[in-house]
Image 1 (spheres, rainbow, N blue to C red):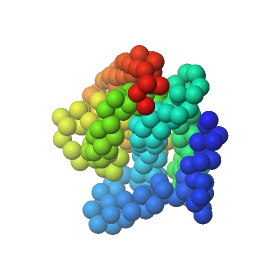
Image 2 (image 1 turned 120 degrees about the vertical axis):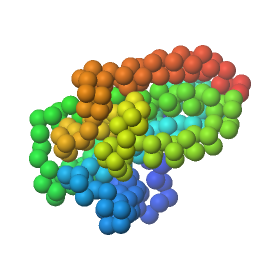
Image 3 (image 1 turned 45 degrees about the horizontal axis):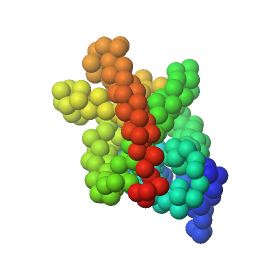
Length: 250
């Protein structure tokens, strides 16, 4: 299912798999021009091109997993009615397909790091742990949304609006130093904000503000991590409880 999902995603397009690279790069170019040439926001951030691209790539993975999973159970209705198999496999297939895209995009990030003379530090070895946290969080949200969508089709529209707002509420485009510390403390409770800032800290520059530095507490990172764990447990239990009715409701 992972293989077929990855193949069908770009079937019929001229550039095919290249779109997995062009989509985040196109968004990066637009935002980089706007925020550096017009708004002058990235001037104070070391290696801002890599800083921005890394945030966009991680955010796009979250959106790809969650948005792509909202209606996936309904779209696989014929398969679910004909074959008895664990329904979570459908969500996992789409998520691992997005993970392949993420790995491909990291090749571009490494290239940008080389071009911008970003030093490769030993702290970069912590990146797989952050990717694992991102994967679990994205997968948990995908489980919940896909199960709710089976009964309430409005979820797709609500999630579309929610992600648009969350994009600007997450420090992807701007440094946390531009907003009041009280607001920064609230924003950093968002697991996506914590993951993106920590990834920038270990990969790009140690001047990146993280949840630990915002709260001035080395244990502050446990707050979003515990949030991810709770969401994962609740989402998996809800999906498991609802999955027995999917065949009748899709």
